[in-house]
Amino acid sequence: MPSKLSLISDDYGRAGRLGRVHVVVAPEDQPPFSINAIAVEEDTHLLLSSEGAIDEPKETFAELVSAAAERQPETPGSVLVRKAEPLEFLAIVHDIDCEPTWCEAWIASAINGIVEEAEWRQLEAIGMPLLGTRHGHIEGRRVALWLARCLSRARFRHLKRIWIVAPPGSETELMWVLRNEFGARR
Image (cartoon, rainbow, N blue to C red; front, side, top):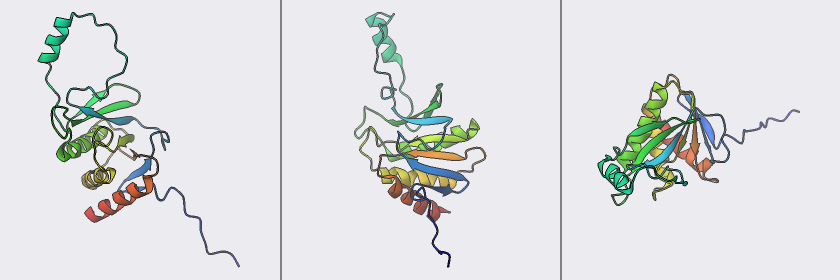
């Protein structure tokens, strides 16, 4: 008599469909598919994503200080695009002049902005870290809730796959949060 058991994919706990989009929760060193863009956690002064190597400036010290004083900070919650391969979506979710440096509304706004930017650029696949968790002390589950809320409201035409970049070992729990919150909002 043939077995009535069937094999369940080990991806079930970390992957699934949320509406029209295939979502995979995976660590940074295990990308599940190629992406067109990756979101990067950033602050209003664009310091967090700056490169570590500093070249000798061509300007004088006084010119550098003057330019820094004149530069306006970016708006919290906004998203900037940096040309790279893949594209980088700089999510402005921190203001180093504030304590705490982050705000829930900024993170939610940046998540919405990333999805809108991806759709506007007609991208099919993006990577999205749990914004605010790298440089802020936010629980990943909270960010997953905000992400699910955004995805439940979005109308996707081009975006097909989202890789949620998460700490190793948290994939199943975060996917569970995403599924439950997304399902509750549908």
